[in-house]
Amino acid sequence: MKFAVITDIHGNATALKAVLKRITEETDVSEIFCLGDLIGIGPQTNEVIEIVRSTPQMTTISGNHDENVLALIHGQKYPDSYRHAKNHHQWIADQLTPDNQRFLEQLPRTVRKTFSEQEALFTHYAYLDEQKPIGEEPLAEAVDGTEQSLPNLFKGHQASLICFGHHHPKQVIRAEGVTYLNPGALGCQPEAVAPFALVEQNSGEWKVNVIEVKYDDRPYLEAFNAAPMPEKELLRKLFLGGRT
Image 1: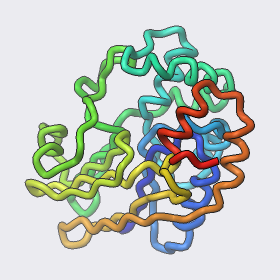
Image 2 (image 1 turned 30 degrees about the vertical axis):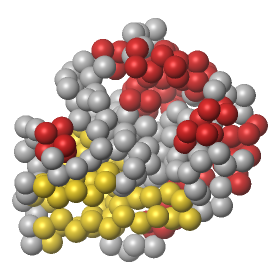
Image 3 (image 1 turned 90 degrees about the vertical axis):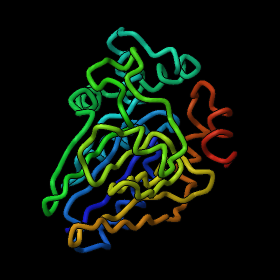
Image 4 (image 1 turned 30 degrees about the horizontal axis):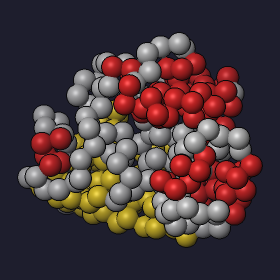
């Protein structure tokens, strides 16, 4: 059985469509797991959510940007660690349609699934306390993924495959009998490439292939340039490699 893993779309519907087109070329992909942060950074908020909602066999969990936006909508505590992004998230919240808001509200934070007697965990990142609301900073601080740091970060989880996002670089690490997979941020790379992973379970071993899809980013950049987003130029510099 083969499945795909995507994460951190960040309001880039153009990249998402390119990746989904590439996944359809794999005739034996049975499921797609989307690890959150559908929105924030990019302007194609509703288009991304509508694509995710309409894609068959896609299991989606929430990310911190998704929950930050919902916290503002509901008048709940907003995380101090993202106070620099509050105006941007408010702008995103103002664009969100009621149907897409409801979709985000029902997303779980984690999903577990068993493949050939091997358990896999799908999460946006490691949680210090999965029950705490986003305003109380439930996520662990991001660390560089190494054979030492990742077992400590996800300590206590009984899974032989742990798939996560949040930290944007690609990470495929095997340590202490566990495969740790972060396919990399699909929607905000310094170049017009969108990564995703194909995963197979074979005789108790996880086979992981991270694929980078080149795409025409002109529709996305046109939307980005036209959007009156707060902190747009900083976002361009930090997350898009300065692409114009």
